[in-house]
Image (tube, rainbow, N blue to C red; front, side, top):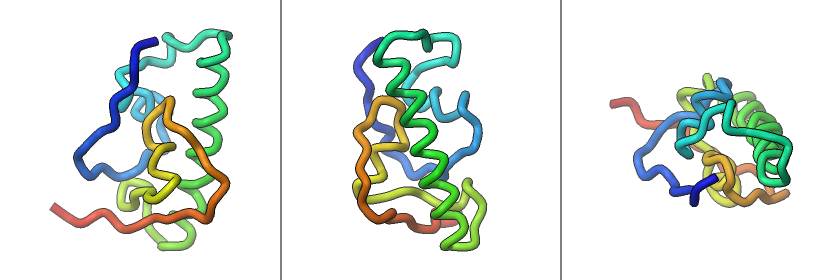
Amino acid sequence: MKKINPISEIVGETTDVESWLIRAGLRFSDLGEDAESIAIRKQWREYQAAVHRCCVTLHQLPSHVQLGGDYANLRIPGGASSNCAIDCRVVPSP
């Protein structure tokens, strides 16, 4: 898989794995059984848990929140993760 570039625009979170993978230019069919694919699947589970906690805390839908701080790296498949407290915010309306 290619080098992953972070997204620059403010985008809410998602509960759809395909949408999440698209942020890194990937498709679900790109994932195999190699170590990198296994790490991305693990990151998806961490991302979903963080999004859920953020949504519960802020009483918002995933599309209206954005992970921040150390958890911002979970937003893009292949980003590093952390076990810190979740930093999240409401996405401003357009």
